[in-house]
Image (cartoon, rainbow, N blue to C red; front, side):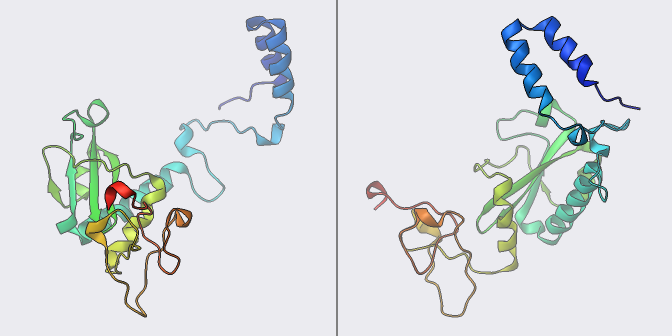
Length: 197
C-alpha cells in the first residue's frame, strides 16, 4: 500500500537538502497543507484515484466509448491516424489520434493502439492540421447536431458568416467581450481588424 510521507520526515529532508533560508520557507509551506488533503496514490497508480464514485481510468474509458460512438455516427466527418501532421508517430508510437471535423472546427483525442478498431472512420497517413483547439473547445461537438453556426457580422471568419434567422438557435461566443455585435455573437469570437476588411 502507498504510504503517506510524515510531516517530520518531509521537514528533515528539506533541512538536509536546502539552505537554511529556503528550508525555513518550505517548512512553513508544508505546515499549511492540511493532512486531510493528502491522499495516497493507490497501488494501481493515479488512474485508480477515485472521487468516491468514479476512478480516473473509469472516466477516461467512458469518454473514449462516448467519443467512439460520436465518431462512428459521423464517419463522414471523422478520421484517425498513427502520425501527427508533422509525420511523427503519436508520442513515439503505441498511440493514435482520432478527430472529428465539426462546423466550428476539429476536435481530437489520443488513444492507445489497442483501441484503434473501436473508431470506424477513415485512416489518414498523417493527422489533419491542429487548429489550436483545447479542452475548452469540446462544445464544438454540439454543433454536429445541425444547429446553425452563427457568427456575428464583425467576425473575421468571413467564410462562416450566416445571417441569423428569427427563432433559430444560435451558438453564443465564449468570448463575448471580443465581439462588437450586441444582438448576436460569433462562435469563434475573433473580431475583424482593419486588415481583415
